[in-house]
Length: 324
Image (cartoon, rainbow, N blue to C red; front, side):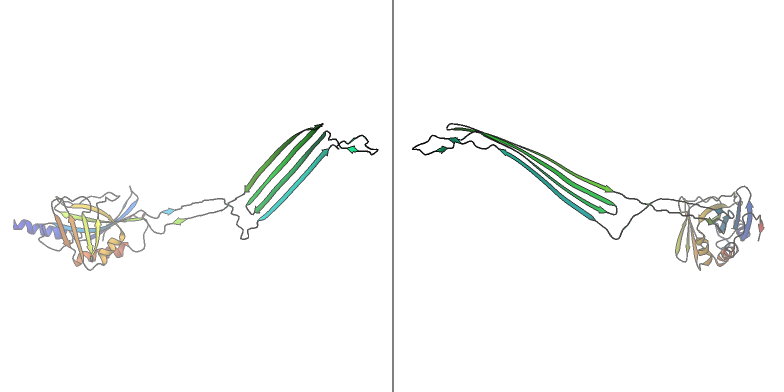
């Protein structure tokens, strides 16, 4: 039994010696750069071997032209001086016509050689027409608004009177007729024009390849079942990074006897691991949890990968493969 654990430790040390691999996937048109066999802990007789590696997938130079043209025609009339002109007019016309019949006088008999004249009330008629017209109008103007208002009123009065007298009896009949016509109106005219020409042209050219970054673990033996959700938690100098399982775009295969799991992360996570003075890992499983502290050699491999693949980008069409 001791020989078995000794053999397993030797195989683990040999199998987890870190190396870097670069290859070109012609099916996906993606260049892959990744670490391999980066053992987290240098313990010889560890029951479970854990390797943490970094990987990058580059999809080459992508030229994107995003052209957005929006044309809106708006014409805005704005005046700092608001000119308002108001005009008001009043007109009134009145016409009166009256016709009165003169009264009749009746001479009386002479008395004592004196002539006496008596006035006998007679018949009389009178009629008249009165017409009055009134008109009011106002006008208000502004740069974008005109208001016209007014009123017209016409009043017509008809009156007639007739008096019939006989002896001591007098009968008077009168008629008054008033007709009023009034018209009010308000006319408002508003004119608004809005014109605003806008032209936006955006052209974006990418100067570096579009890349996705991954952390992937290799666990031996391969019967370790991962928990759902954030199964990998990285603690770099006290800063927590939770990672969920995300398969890469290119094809990949696990080494014999290892469980390989990929986690897509931001490039800042790889930089934090490479530059941290202390890195701790927690891998959550369905039946237990693995906790490891990265040794100096493992973090050195991350720094080498960082210097190699975070420099000036190469074209994804460059087909390069091999171990360094």
